[in-house]
Image (cartoon, rainbow, N blue to C red; front, side, top):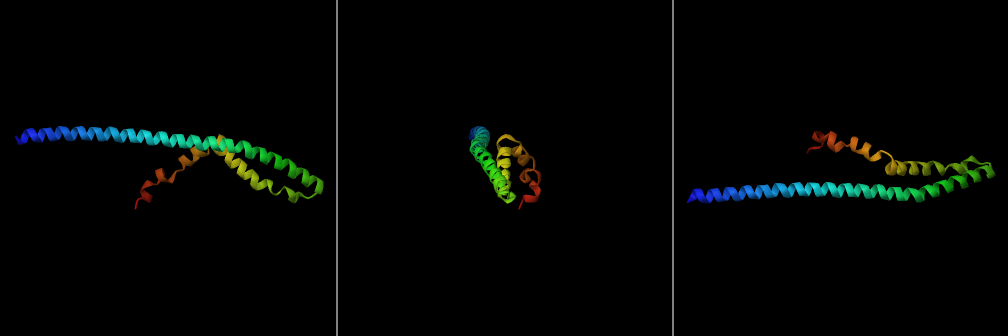
Length: 117
């Protein structure tokens, strides 16, 4: 009698373990899908932002250059410098390889043993 119950429990345990393994696999697939969608949304948002900011940057560059020439004061061009950094960063995120470089230099993956507490 004990053997029959034990065998039934083992079969039940194996079934539960298989179900848990399948559920874990599905959760991992879903997490990866969600992460990929979030990354795609971030890139899409950056590209959309870049359209508007690029227009603003181009217009500001023309206006500031014209103002610097008319006033004969090159200091008027100073705002172009930080604006160009912002523009180049967003261009790199939207159309460049920034995300691949971030993943390549990821401390979480390359130095996992140093981060363990």
